[in-house]
Length: 105
Image (cartoon, rainbow, N blue to C red; front, side):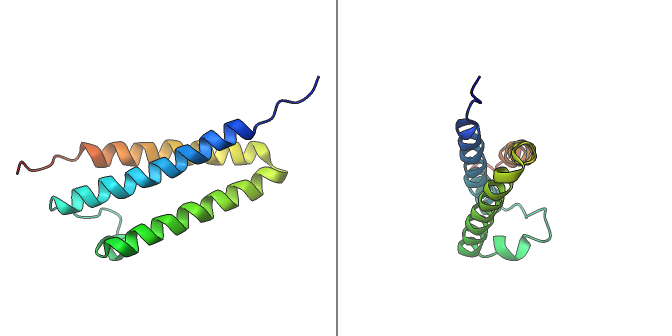
């Protein structure tokens, strides 16, 4: 019996990861605009400069997907676990960011 291709699964995981990164940028900038502070001290320098923040998130997203694809070639199960964990973790980050109360304008 031929092995089923996992390309569709990985494509979905990669799209999900990219989507959570876009939502993380949006929700973070939204919260900062409302007067909240970045909770991650390692990211505070970038969030003070929105263009740098977007560039950093774009670069780290591309880098993560590049590494995942390299890992997938030789260790598909490890890549699957890695991408599932990253997608799940960032889903929680984004949900938390969007749950921050926004002041009424």
